[in-house]
Length: 86
Image 1 (cartoon, one colour):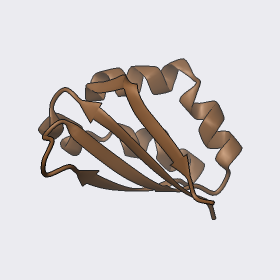
Image 2: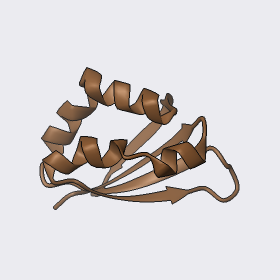
Image 3: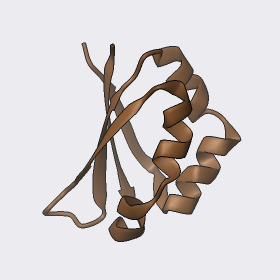
Image 4: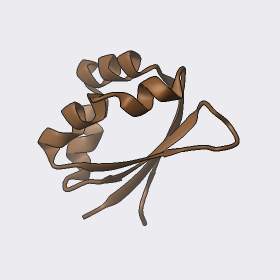
């Protein structure tokens, strides 16, 4: 199962941490998520995603639903960096 690392900035780390959006968005695709917070930069966060189907993740991230979920969580989409395990 491919592993993906996603790093981005958020408006409010507490709001982002407590959100159910990740589970609602990724859960139906069987994607498990672990969250991380940068201790030096209070607005930078990260995710490790275990992804059964990488193409489904890529498709999901292009959907309006994903953009809406990111907006609700206060994600700054222009800062999103996604790294795939090689």
